[in-house]
Image 1 (spheres, rainbow, N blue to C red):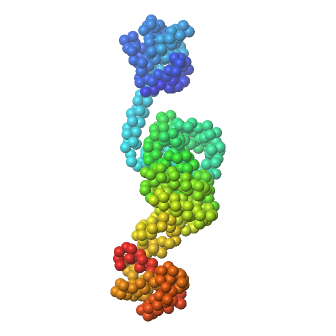
Image 2 (image 1 turned 90 degrees about the horizontal axis):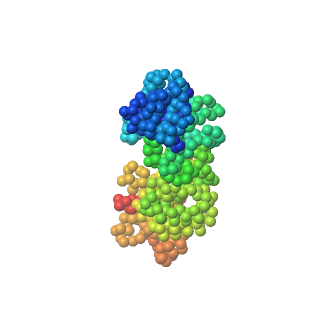
Image 3 (image 1 turned 90 degrees about the vertical axis):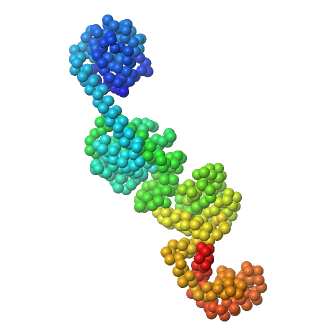
Length: 520
């Protein structure tokens, strides 16, 4: 359907005048010549002359009329027709009736063809599962490059066939994001500042170059989730193409909204930055710097990462909210994110270390109350390494389960050696890396029901201090002396040799890992 005001706009070269009832803009499907036999369809535009209307003026109600003023259309005639609910477009005397009819008929035909093609295109788009395919179709229909960016100004997708001759946007695409300086300058433009808060396309011309950009904001559930940008690198967009742009926007929203979290704009930018870091989607310091500025995420180096696991945080919403509150009180400058099945806290190590013991105790109590467990990372110097540390923590939870670690709060450092073992391809050969003394004592204890293996381990863990070892094992100091003599007799080890002590220590870890996996 085409509106009466749209027809009026197409007839601009004919110098038309228009009168219509208040708040009425009729939708029209076709144009007919004026006839007394067919005046009952309010979706038609009837064309004729003013003199042809006068004899039947009492019969004309709620009709849309395109009239040539072969006789003057007086105020009284015009008023009567408006009172009868009619809409009038009047062309000057001397206008060719048939030429004008054919012109308007062509407008309707082109509009019908546009809707037919749009419907076919819409069907193809809505059934497409691939965003790249939608972008390629948009490029084909709009005959220009198509660039999709999210609200944090990261380039999500772009078309590949038509070259981007706009140097600034070519650079944005190459980098995979818009620089902070670029975004700042764009936001100063009046065309951007005055742009509609809808998906209606608007044009932008910046100072750096004169290539017109057509931009549409993408909205999902009343929140902006990105932009569709069409630089006119190949040809100027026609009116029908601009209409298509609105349709493409709706389809883009359908695809982009699948992975968009609905929080405030800045929180979305921060979370997307965090996810991109974890998923290794940021590849340079310059990109990281720009994304940090745009997201407002500010932390002092070095960083600390804390991962908390329990029930699904997406399902256990109440638990998540109360935990979020507790963490905010303990670490007010930290940033919390839910990623997959974990709640992750990113903060500066300075804040992590401040009142460390007291905060650690409070955090442990919170975790225990909520039946949660947490592992915290080593120091992180560069956020580009966040992915490595994140996946180490994920591995840490798996290892903590294997090793039956009961603590609710664990340093990843305690699990690091076990991760080295866990990553070995030939786990069945791990015993070959053990010091022979460990295996000798372990086998002797099994055959003789003694405790020499555990005694040596406690002695090494207590820095070879007899009193501390005796206290830990709840036995007399002399008993420890006796057992150490027996251990020396069985294994012939020199505990004054640092290398021997080191080999015994890592062998205990290997055997602990192997035994927990049920291999030994």
